Image (cartoon, rainbow, N blue to C red; front, side, top):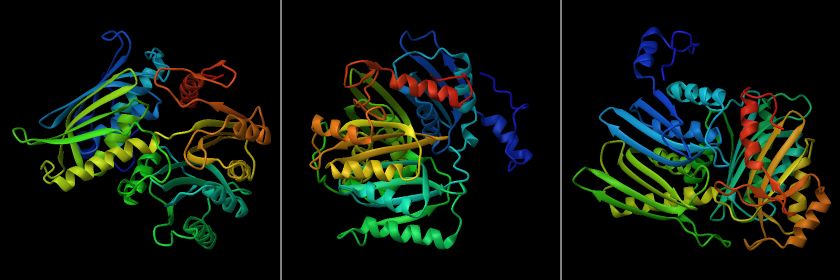
Length: 441
């Protein structure tokens, strides 16, 4: 692919020398739909820099693409990456406008920015997880007349991390009043502390523009969730991670075997990058529902992993990164009109029925809300179907739907057995948001 840098709109902060360097080092991107029968190949040649692999994987995962295989190799100061991708239904990519958008996005990753949250105030929360905590958080925000526009919440090993984007419910403007921000932080910290988390509960207003899911990984890493033991039942399918040193080549070799899922590669590469490791070579493969990943890494100072303590830390951190998003439980999707106090009401209903929220994704578009919750009972076990039906009755049968956990290359099925193309709808919604199709219905 030849990317036309003469016609592109340059960022205002670049001088002429930086533009020249950009033209010399711009990634070369090629989309190949002929070499593989069941996947689209995305090939990237790029000048090497720390984090470039993460940026490429981030672009692909943010476009809701599933990476089935990948090959990464570094030759001196140049990276060569090949990704086998499909949509979330397992189909090759055929829409020419979408393919063009992928090429453009990958071709400018050196200067790419995260999703814009201009006009919103970002809250970061970490603390000890407990039943009903999310309900208390949303109740505080509703009481303080804060409208939640978007949010993501993860739990792992008894800890919780959440990034919540809010605005004034009446004016719709970002919250800039320092006194109100102080009140929000103080009340949320009080909620997070509960009776026994005085030291580790944290709240802050985030001003930095950071990829939301990368930031969640950073928050849980800083909270040292990887050192803690799970307090409720989790999956028996613990990721298998090993670290060996290849002394002849001066690399540490990381091998991972685990259940395959979407965004797996992003979670692993994100963690290695933020732990200041550089991936020089990698092979990623999947077979059935299993994923096999191998990375040849060095620390940013050029030295491989040098001690058993460091090896163990890498193993624990990678296992935690994989487990954070692999939430156990039933997936509930709430699709309804947005209104003040909606999240407080819904999560209070969960709490009153003894349901534990292990992960949540909140989003609003205009006056519509699409909220996804993963729930278990108080012990981390599957929820009784009668309780779920009772909750649906309270919240609204047509608004709250039961979905199975997302499966690689499978469609989801609702409780009546009818096929729901929910993953395909996510992909079409993505095309719609990019202006590449007129409707996602």
